[in-house]
Length: 251
Picture (spheres, rainbow, N blue to C red):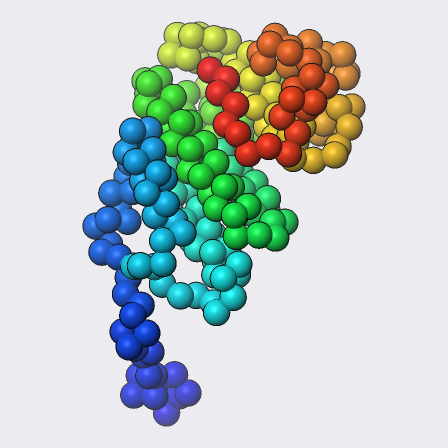
């Protein structure tokens, strides 16, 4: 008889310690609100400090910092899956998840993790709000966007995307512009700029290194596209937002 026979498994009972879990319906409604881009519901939830509320939250570690970090990972993973199921490109959702979990891993205090959790939830919710607002993409355009996110650090050409999707490049270009109100090339640059904003805020990588990371032809080319999209140069953006947890809304 194997070591994992059910009769040898003793389920811990935390009820004597006053530890009970919230109803699944409450958690489901929270994740659903994020996936629907419902800012008002999320604002109410965050205002109630549900994330750091001890009542109804499982105890994953006796260390308070480790415990809240574990819950951060669980929450981020659930939000990622809800959002990808609700229309966010899978690669984009997991890149966002990886980014916030890696950022959380560097934090040392309870309050820092709490603040980053709020930023993460707002970020996912706001992105889903924009996706729902522009939710008119066909299967081909969705697949095109997935390809872009999977190859975001490379130089991406319409011909390569069309070949991957087994479509005519002219047809794909017309379809994308019709549904997204912008050319594929502009969309690609915007997504690269969005990701570069995070590096400018939370890393010490030089502007040149960031430009190279996303395969811009030159630093000046990167700066031009960044300024066109964000309204300021990368240096000014870094000076204003370095190591802050505020949400920068760029539509």
